[in-house]
Length: 150
Length: 85
Image (cartoon, rainbow over all chains, first blue to last red; front, side, top):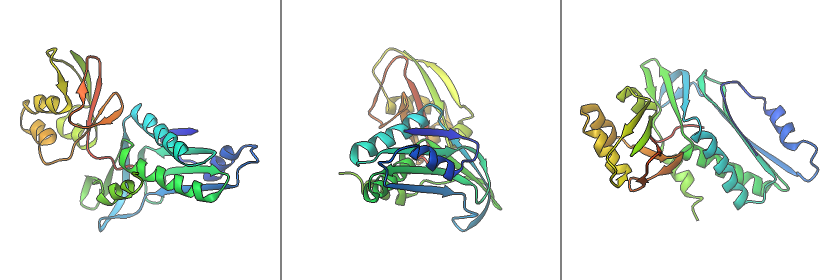
């Protein structure tokens, strides 16, 4: 399991190779990457700043991976999340899941993103032509998380 | 009872505090009681902690609800709903 919170960019290809290493029992790697869009709620976004809660963030992300591992048959998982100031088209978050088969890896990856969106302590502030504003949490994210509750 | 408090995002900006140490009477304390106690500091505190804004809380890095008990030495954080990813 790998969890990283960093200001630096990441390389998806490198991270996938690290996750696979020399293993020969992996039949599927699923990846999700979140990017900064240049439009939010109808306004052009020129910059995004991400704040987090050091200490809690890492624990929260590790807990999300552990919950996914308990629920699906997956081999390994990684979450990298950037913080600090980003520009449109920049990479924000990467979730990788490896497993024997794609079905469980797809489900685990989606589960991890839905939980990250609603539980991991990150906050976005964006700059638009109207000035700076905190991004509001979306109810659709709560709904997305809710579908995993047994 | 001594606790350490953290505020994040919109709360941190509005309250002009990111962290503080509090020394409180040794009585049973919950998240809700702590919010009410802090709200007594005045306008912006009441608005941010007991107003319309949704506030989430964590004790020792775990998300908790308003009824969660706070103990001596705990690290308590208040913040808006999260928006990462």
